[in-house]
Length: 634
Image (cartoon, rainbow, N blue to C red):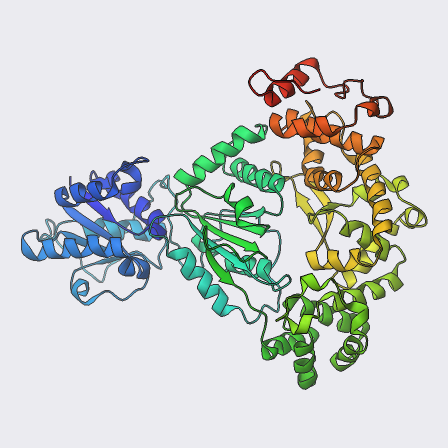
């Protein structure tokens, strides 16, 4: 039996643990820091003691291992000991096809890459055996080779595989990388470098830049290209705190860290602790984060989790490695336009159009969809675009000065909305209503189940298959995505939703005056009151629907003037959900208090403002909001 110090870098932890497991099956003692150092432990002291007392140092060799400072320190100390007074001290095991350094190249090593588990195990066993003359007659080499007896499968999954890499064990990436994904190889390399410069810590790479520059697509492309590097890849909707919390708890459910019916607050704490202690091989993507301050509350605290954040905000240097995503050069934009539309002969027109669009990838996709749908040449689109720029200008605050002289992508979106309206008359009002809601997937049942809440003629246009036809018209010009969103805790339950890009929301909302917005938000509040489930306090079945509506309802209620029964109804349900489903009593209290007391009769609730919520639940809310014996909730 030998005491073997396993030297590795954090990126190769899965390999180190599999090798360590095999060592212990052979009767050796594997010294792996992740197995022996608890939180607060002195890593340097542990390394000094274990390295000095070890019989051998086994180096898990990869390109990253050869370049990292700590692993190089361990390897060089082992090589020096082997040359002075401890022969055979260093045992190099290559896990990828990398070139060994000169001083290490002369040491006999073992290769485990490019083979499956059943071939890797006997290679490792043979490598660890002391050299000796054969104790039995050597068989004739021309005979049949002995067949290895099948071995029981190890508890830990073998991290290598012959042939193609395996896909991630767990993934919830909601979008597919577009077929024509161009011009981002440099950005992908920068992200990879930022995530791998971790030195044993959680690493965060923040992608920021103009809206519509393709940050979300770039994050999905990185996850796709590196899917074999992670055991779990998890997408988190970071635009609101409720969705960040829900998606993190959803991760905990999928990883079997928390129960499906666990309340959110304690479940979230467990997930954050596990990400700190057991985050290796996990990639988290926080999409569309509003700010570093909001994100930081829900970021992994330590550990080795890899994190990508996409955001419009530029101030990430305090918590992440910022990666600014630039617009396309005209040549790259032209490549996209000709490939996307199949019009290679219109190269010169594509270059001019790309210049007119300011290199914004989302604008290029919109222009290509418009040209393809109507069958017009790229030059014609450029002429229409240039002829009436004043019609398509959006709020100048959304167009930085360096972005094509202040012209925004709204020109492209406005043209597309006009054409969609020609296909179905409900398309334009539908997208304007949707633009007034939070930037989340919008359940279509908000319009179908509460059709009567909307004004005519829109309500009548939604009858029968009218809603589906209106969505199809918008999808034809890439103005919305229609998708089935899986429940965070039970992926078998899905909701049919539409999703608007944030720039589409701005352009669509600008098509109506603010006075009309007030009326439309009132109708949306009525629809939300009708569709947000009742009984959310103690009915887990109602929580499923509430989870999908919650972020939308919260933003809608906060952005609408209070005073009517529907508004009070929505606030009451929001409070009941936070109190009963999330156990977030402090969050529930402001919504109870915001509800007008004189609305109890209209909404079917008692004069206390708590309606049918039990006396016990009201006490819980009061207790959560009472500062050391102060005044209870009125």
